[in-house]
Length: 220
Length: 178
Image (cartoon, rainbow over all chains, first blue to last red; front, side, top):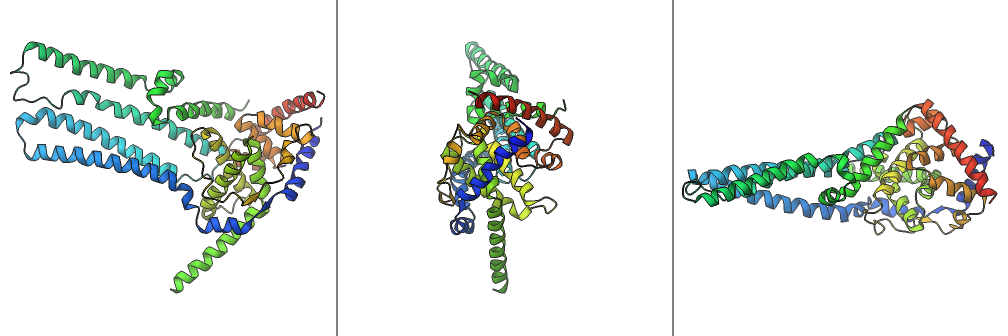
């Protein structure tokens, strides 16, 4: 079959489309007049709920910290340090979340296919990095309740050992998990399940597609 | 008040311009949707999503490019992202009414035994990027325009199209003679 024939076969479609496809301009205009805002309403509501929940959580952390600092005593040292770390990590997580959201909302598809698709894939990969940052807070949840007033001087050796093992294992687990956050592990089911909340499946798809694009760009 | 009136008039013109562009290039939307979605409902959803993105980008339309180039860029970008997100995406059918495009004569795509049916079937089997290339080639876009839409060099476009064409031709003949 010659090249021209493929094109001719394709052209049969143009004639049929012209005949078959009618645009209802009035309906299209109506929806444009509404600026298609409602199309994004569902998504916006969902993400707004996420933002509100996050803001409340950060406000609560901020208030607790503020209270602890303004009524400072050396007894709250562990608490202040732990809560500050947790708050900072969550602020960073929140900033990333907003950044991703704004980026997705303002994405203009009017760029070359390679450019836009690469940006989309990169965005999804950066969502994976977001969960990487969030896990850094784990060890601090094992130290916030300690107090200079009774720890370690007023507790027995078994409790000290328990506390060291608890915090130590959380640190170990966090470092291990942090290191595991890399695209190569996306093929492992447990890892995909872990980052499912951050869009694990789409991250995997994005990475696969990103590699396809790199291959596609090669001149061979 | 006068400013509001001018604004309204400008918006009316803008909407009318947009509708004209869509009307004169409606085939692009349909062909892209048909190549990327096998399912009738998905096709309708995709067309709606493309129209929405076209409308959002209409203000930033760069006159350096033809309307068809602009439409292909957006349509293909939306189609590829839509296709990849298919599992998780939420339907937006309630927003844009389903009846904007009259798709009643869908039979033209269901005739698997015709030449066009076979060609459509073969195109649907290509990966996302090859599909985009082939679509543009069949629409008789020149290599320069294809390279602007896809974002790879003209040489690369030529090599890849050559390869896909040969593959399609062999498969076409095989299916035809079955």
